[in-house]
Amino acid sequence: MKAIFIVVAIVTFNLSSFSQTTAYQQLVSVNSKWLQVTDFDKTLETLPAKTLNEQQLIQFHLQQTEKLLRNRNVNNFTARQKRKRAKLLNILHSYCVAGKFPINTLHQNRQPYFIDDFNTYCAVGYLMQQSGADAIAKEINATQNYNYLEDIHHPQLMQWVQQSGFSVEELALIQPGYGGEYPFKITEIHYNNIGTDVNEYIEILDGHFFLDYLTFDSVYFYNTTNVIYKKLIKTQFSSTPSSIRKIYYYQFAGSSDTLADEGKIELISYHSLSQYFKKYDLRYTSDSIITNYYDYKDSAILTSRSSVAENNSTAVGTSVNFCGSASFNAVFPPSVLPTTIGTLNNCVQVPVPITLGDFNSTIKENKIVLDWQTLTETNNNFFEIEHSTDGKKFNAIGNVAAKKTSGVNNYSFIDEKPHYLNHYRLKQIDNDGKFSYSKILFVKMANANPLTIINAPAKSVLQVNIALDNSKLDALELYDLYGRKLKEYKAIQGNQQLNIKQLVSGKYILLLKTTIGEVYQQQVLIVQ
Image (cartoon, rainbow, N blue to C red; front, side, top):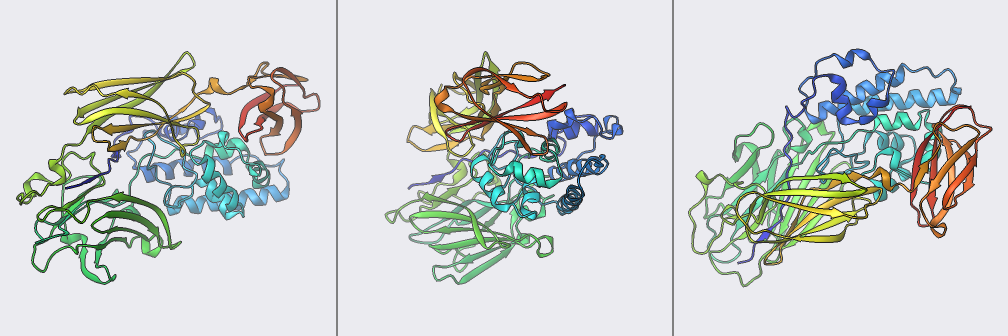
């Protein structure tokens, strides 16, 4: 028989994962920009850290950010800027209370998600959406979704900043990095598409219980004519003990209680008093499995995936395996495994090719060293290392052969020419050609920024160096922290002097634009 194995590295959120001792350190763990803030409530530095789940942690960060921004002196603002700022702070407050934040589904490290896979906006993205700049937010999502604000560049972003009543630094403080959260999904189904219906079951990995919109309530089973032939509610499932995410499973009794040979299985979430509905469906035939996520608010498919299953020549007594989370070594409790019938293979009886341990990076001599570890290996052929600058389009940059030995194995790979922003993932390839991906590792290489400020602070003349060919250079633009463009210069390779005599003392942002649309930035301190 043929089986589907889609290995998804699951990062289980640990309620006690924070080792920080103060509330301030918790804020820094969410957004390192807190280290640059001086006017925050100093009692946070001694206030003991509370045990917070991911949703509560983001809310705490946004509450403290809102408090800080409301207490700042804005007497030098225009009346329009004050009104806009006050309105957006009220919107930020409502966003925080609602507690609907982006979900980190791809990255191993804490990472910004401007708009996530489920169409949930980050705080800054939401402020843009609610203030008439949704088109800009969606364009950022399409090309720079995982960037911190200081690395996001859009032709109209600074215009929106200028109108927002916030500075770039304040907006960068608002934007957190998100930890891993996962919604409910079907991780395994067994059914017989030929012959007697025996040994059939479905398994569901629920979402985190403290985010109710990630957990399912009921499951509907449809036949090929889209008629519901069975409905199950959560209490009808057995489950594994777990404090964070539970695995639910249902064993079909046989005879009249069976899975249709082809059809659709639909999971529904009815939580939050109709404010946040989600639907997940898995459509299956003898040849394929397609999964979709829907958001009822938008009535649109959010994500989908198609996978090849078995074909119509599958022998009697065998079953389709769908293993959406094969990284769980024993997703189906051995104590309730049905007896093997004929040539039936249960998902848990098939070894997972690898169990990936740590996946880390270090920067050495302007190179990025990737290190990873496998805890177990079976049928593993090699690793392909993939790189992306935007976290979406990946290209292979090398491979490492598997050691094919038992026990813990350590691997490494050196990226000799990293970019300014780097996303890495491992593609693990089996001997039979099947493959799976690791989580994505993000590494920012500050030294790879071709724009360098030579004199800091600067007075009268700003000296910069640009390490790019003239054929790739477009312009240099100088902005204040409120998004107003003050000067524009022609960019020249090598050392360059920029006249800044008319500018008052303060912080500014210098942008370097290239002919292929790349933009680099450095903050400038001017003291006249």
